[in-house]
View 1 (cartoon, helix red, strand yellow):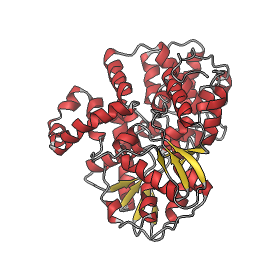
View 2: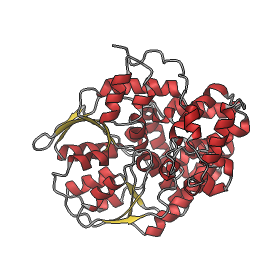
View 3: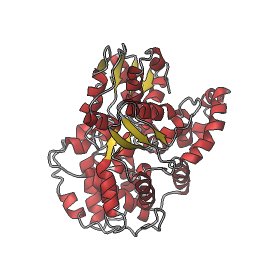
View 4: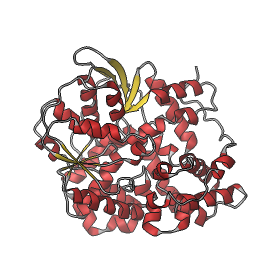
Length: 438
């Protein structure tokens, strides 16, 4: 058996690229769903415009600064994939292109430094954990408010300022055991991905996920050997890094009926493992098998069917569609069905649900100005619902929208679908949810 940390395979050829490019007929159905086109109305910052640039590069045009800038401006939200009547695989196209950018384009030193810092920190839960203590002290001492008022970080680096603003309020971070036993008769044995940002910044989401699965009759296996799934790397063109993380994840989760994921970007990437490792004989079959067993939290519960009693939870909720859940995984109805099955809960829809909030993995760190504009649009639509609670299924979305709401003077509570179900199944006071601001 090949070790999960073996040297990465060389970058594969992309024989399907000409067909992928030819599938686009430049009809324009993607335009109103593309966040950057909505913001700027610039053709080259739309999916069909970027596909035109991809074709130019495939025909020999160099990856110059301007061309790369248009590719970098893409959030990778996949709303265009949902909207496209021709079935264009823009998701695959942008992944291929970003990998080429990382291999061929020499970024300016400052940009390389920021990207190096981001990817040296966020895919590594232990490094994030080491950051928790100092960051928590920083927040409790009120230094965050002082730093923001001073504008010091903004002048030094907009990306560093974005990291500081987005950090949620940190409390204690209890660790989960390696196994949580099913309550009542066991219906399934599932693995649970704890993630990176989710695990260290939102540990309550993981605890709620494990409790809900156990209450619904699942033995929950939480392998301590798991690490980053590779989502941030894959969506940023760092393919070798993504493959290394994927191999480790596969090795950690073999032997369970399903792998339940509570972060949209992670679930999306794990479902792509079969394609990611298709050219590695020792891993291709195992990767495809894991991809086929990967389920979003809401998706899995909808398939399993309810068993535990739902107790009343009188609260109004605005549900946010995370892009990598709604567009990349096609999971829209399941979380809504789970939430509306809770007695007393009122679900309110957010206007323009298909337009990204601006989080998009590392986008709000690397392109904070554009991300801020999108965050403000989403926050205004959330406020218009007048809901008491915002529910999102991705940690990046939760941080992004909560930060934008704070800028507008609104402190709406934020929770994950798992936390809402956990409160209902355990009969908690709704005030426990309404106190959860990021």
